[in-house]
Image 1 (tube, rainbow, N blue to C red):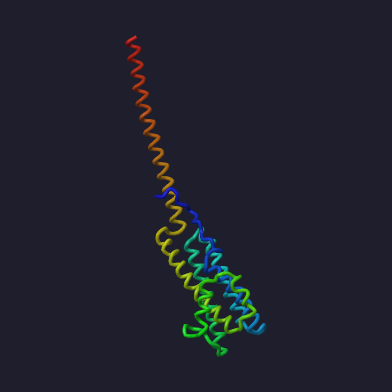
Image 2 (image 1 turned 90 degrees about the vertical axis):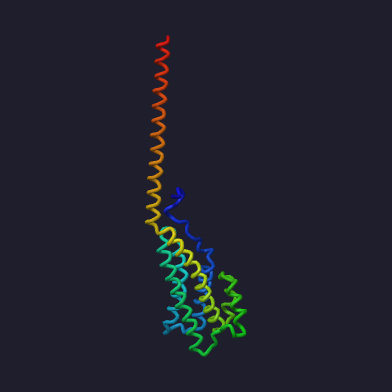
Length: 218
């Protein structure tokens, strides 16, 4: 039993997570994309895309915060975030295909430059200067690629969390280990005290016997 085990986990600093940073930039970019390239009225896609982008970002935050008490809850919320990002990715893909625009793959001449840029840039300030410069095809392909990259990063993170959950269990298991560890420590201390008292009692008897012997000699 590790006496330093805590019931509450330290939790991740979600602001430093690369997939969170990308999801924040993606949300802001999606908002601008919808304003620039989709009808302002009568198209439910706008609300769906903005809500999916927001759900991805917010569930990462909530999952990381809840992870301090429940790895199981963190896993569930991060999987909700992944599902939202998947939905958004399909919306960007549908935008391109329905308008006969190119979905850039590895054979497209602009794919590598765009992919390399999105791979190393995570923060909103890296993308914001382009929000009013990119056309619909450029912005949709960038959004689609960011969704794919967020998914890959989250998969790796989720695998780590799942291993920790298998190894350490949930909050109930940690509480049990902490309680039983505390009890075991109390029992150990009690036995030490009893042993100390026993030794002291024996020493007192020895001293009393020695004093009695001296009195008899005097």
